[in-house]
Figure: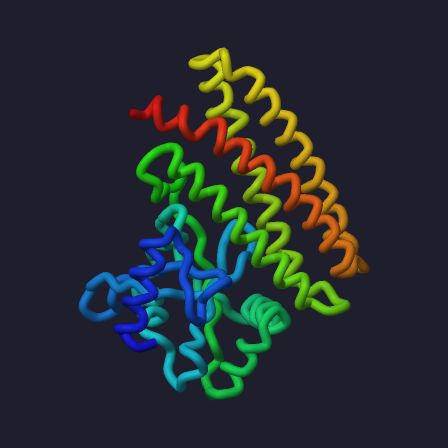
Length: 279
């Protein structure tokens, strides 16, 4: 992509917590910062990604150009990279996948979006598939300036991912693709992790500091349990090889309704208090 276009996307991404318009609107996008293979300078590039469990995948398509993109050469030379999601930033290790693993994951990407096959058809080179795995042991670095802003960013990221998954389900026809299953499972794991963190740290701290919040926190605890049950049911449905998109859609719609009400209530009740405590 031309440098000026890239910079416009980068500026929009950073100004809007990962939300952009144009060709990336509604898609999964990260900012990938690599170290130059020759000069050692840092370079940031907007890149689409695919969820893959504890890691994410990026494909060095360059739109089907005859040569690999510069960011790919950079990470081959320097596999330590920085990932920005719009919600948090983290250091990651880049691994170029090979052999059957590369082929399997590229086929999964093509099943989800035939555009990858179109890019491959335009060039003689094999499009590289790269796995990015967090290299950080501690918590991620959140982009929010205040605790309330951070909570809103995290919630909005879940809302965006749910919208994306619902769009993918609507377009999936009668078959549930492998990548779509992975996307749903990644959402489940992300929600589990987020709520577990609140249950272990934020809610107990708030109970200790503000006992008058007990009714609010009791309700949030109960909502966490209901959402956990919905996530478990969605996982069970996804585990059925014969599961049709219609059944998954129904589970996702139930989850969406419950989760949206929960996120809204939590924001209304906790954000003013969290920001006041930090002030």
